[in-house]
Image 1 (cartoon, rainbow, N blue to C red):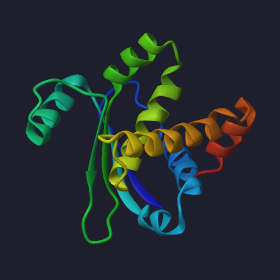
Image 2: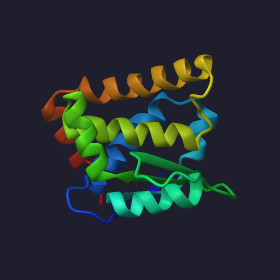
Image 3: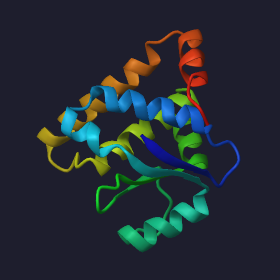
Image 4: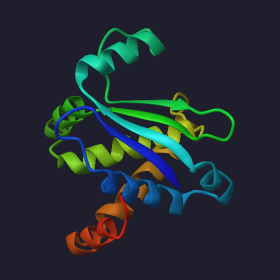
Length: 154
């Protein structure tokens, strides 16, 4: 799994943390989908840049938490996360920033893999998988998470 991590804004999670979350996602995927998770990028941006991306690609002139772009020719694609937006969202949901940011990374990755939530049945399937992966991560002790993250090479 070769994902580039671009941290364009202060407070973005580390590359090790991103790789840790991506590996947790891959462990829960069927083999065919897991094989698609080989090359991609995760980009952490501020609200202004996210607003521009959202306006250009979705026609909505406001920031959002996460955008996902499918790749071509065997590439996974890109996931863009607005750090300030996710930080505010975490506060409003009363969860830690890293938990909400992991949720958004998982959410974006599932979109790239073809999951969607426009129809109730599809939404249930997507959100169940999203929360299962998140619970896999949260169920680890802090020491186990630190050890797992430290095991990744930057």
